[in-house]
Image (cartoon, rainbow, N blue to C red; front, side, top):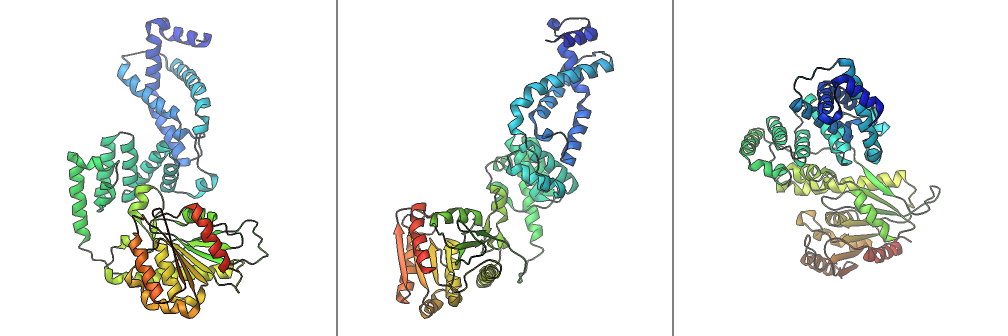
Length: 453
C-alpha cells in the first residue's frame, strides 16, 4: 500500500486498515457516486464518443457491483466529502490501472462512419453482432425508451437479458413486446434462450397477450399486390482483375435462407480466373430467421408474407424478373464480354430459379448449373424445356445422394424430365448431403470455363 493511501485512510478514520474500517469508507464512497457513474455512463452511451469503450468496459460493471455492496454494508460512516472524493478517485485509479491493461484488447468502439450517422438501434445491432453485450443492451434500452413500439428491439433486448441470467428483466422486455403488439409466438418459442421464459407463470401471460394480438391482426385482412423497389447484388472479380479488359459473366443464385457472401466464398473454389461472378440477394427477408440467428436470411419465395399458394406463380415471376434485372445491370455497369453468353448457377432454391431463368430466357444464357436444386411445378419448367433444346442451352446438375434437404429422388425426377425433352443434360451424383464440397467445385468450375470461351 502506498504512503498517500495510508495517510488518507488515517485522516478519514483514525484507525488502520487492519480493523476493516477503511474498506467500509471505500465502499460508502463508491455507493455515493452511483448517480454520478450512471450519468457518466448514460452520457457516454448517448454520444458514442466518450471515454474509449467505457460503456462496454468491465470496469463499469465492477463499479456498479461495488456501489451495491456499499449500500448493503455502510452504517453511518461520517467522513468529510472532500476526503471521500480523494479516496474514491485514488481507488478508481488503482482499479483502472489493474483492469485497463488486461482488457485493452477487448475494448470495442463504433467505427467513425457508423458513429456519425447511426441511430441507437443501429448501434445496438452493431454491438450485438460484435458480441459486445453490455453496449448492445445499453443501446437497446435507449432505443426502446424512445421507440417503445419496436417489437423486434424488445425481443433482442429480452434475449440479451436472458443470456445474462436476468430472467425478470427479460420477461419484462417480452411483456413490453407483447404490449407493443407482437403476435408471432414462433419467433420466441423457436429461440432456445427465450423459450424457457414462456413456461413460467408470467411467460404464459405473455403468450396469452401474443395470442390476443394475433386475433386482433386477423381483423385486418391482408391483400397482395406487385411491389417495385431497389435491390442489391454483390460482385466477385477474378484474380488480377483489370477494368480495361472484358470478362464473361456468371450469374450465381443463392439458396433459401442464405445470402450472397456465403455463396461467393464458395465460388472462389470454382477457380474461374477469367469471369466476373455476380450474386443478387433474394428479394425477401426471412424476418424470424434473421432475428433468431442474428444474420441476414433471404428467400425468393416470400414465406413471411403468408401469401396463399395461388400467388406462388406470381411470386416466381417477380423474383425471376429481379434476377434478370440484375443481369441487365451487370451487363451495363461492369466490363462484360457481350459476345459470350452468361452461365447461370443456382444452389438449392437458386437451382430452381436457374431452371426458371434458363427456360424462360434461353436466348440470354449459354448454360445452367444446378446445385442440389429444388423443383416446383408452378415454375412452368417442364413446359418450357423445349426452349433449352431450341437455343442449345446445356445443363449440368450436381446432387448429393444423402441430401436431407432436397432428396436425390428430386434429382431423378428432374433427370427424367430433361432426358425425355432431349436437353443436353448431365447429372453428377456424389456421396454427400446438400452442400457442394470444394473438391467437386473445381470440376464444376472447369465445366463452366469451357462454356465461357
